[in-house]
Image (tube, rainbow, N blue to C red; front, side, top):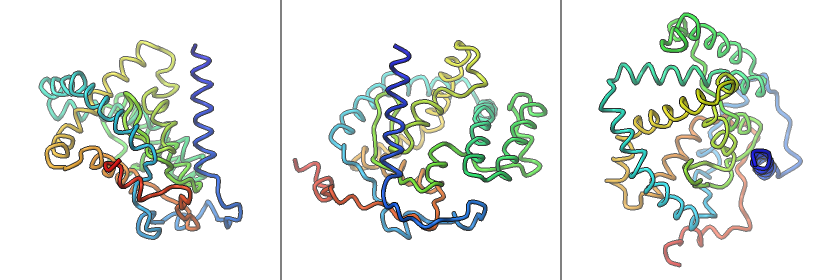
Length: 271
């Protein structure tokens, strides 16, 4: 069963990558070493900052399922977590989880050939793990070792892959097609450091899920109470937040989905 699941997830990942990267074969070359080649505004320069949501009908049904599960289980746990912890404890917990994910940042900087940032993230992890007592304290930031966290989705964007379709995954929540590898595996499975102990892996993953939900309580309550369409509000906020952190090559242009009737997608509620 585990082998089959890994095969299916691997096949899905490569399908998403191929779908995202495929396009014009005559793309111009670029120099990876020049940082200014990647100071690029996706939404403004391309005028394509609308979410591509071709599976909206299905996504909305899964959204309702996730929302129900959240209200019954995850939100009460997050409220309880907030009740028994103060801001200082939550800051320490968040610091530990940020430190655990730092090796993934180092690897992704290496894949992007941004070796200087990769070394900075490596030293940040080493210093916070030792002098910061396993990441409880962020010592590295005091000496200006603050590289931006990187995921495999950032690496794909760096190579010119567009976001792909918006997906609402059962239990996992929102993801763009390009983010699916991070969402299904890296963000929730952690990495090689805790892979040695399955119990530790599950325990840390559970605490992280509750911690992350607690950090979003104010935001989610505000969105739900003040939006006409909660699904659309969440979709837009997530898309804009993730895209604001991406760096694309200067030659990158968003794909025009010629086979998609955008007006039909927008008129979903009229069906």
